[in-house]
Length: 152
Image (cartoon, rainbow, N blue to C red; front, side, top):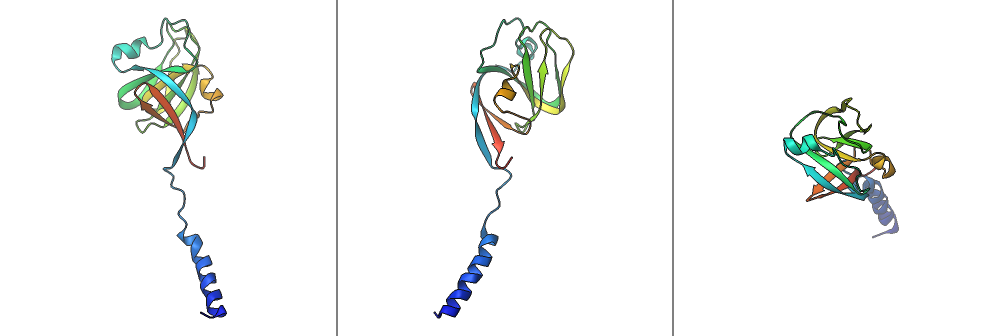
């Protein structure tokens, strides 16, 4: 192969190379550092009781509420003395909104849209751990891990 032909071949490959690169898929997720141990609330009675009457909640624990369908969710703090933050989570496990709740306040705190799950933690835990709407949660037995889309 002549130098001129080799040069043309290298130029053609360099121009084609960017087209061969794969764009990052929007479905790529990276695991975030925090992990939580959760108490599950799966029955109407467990969901109604929630974290009521407790004096405290360990910093690395929360309560994960599981509902049968995706729907607007609403929570209040009757008989709950612990200041909490709540994440409303869609059926696809994406955090759609996060709100703070005040102890003993019976004012409803509602999801911004339809949600099938809710996660209550000590107030400020989401902020302290960099968890935000758009992040994904993964429940394995009694542990929750968090993920964020690559590039966000």
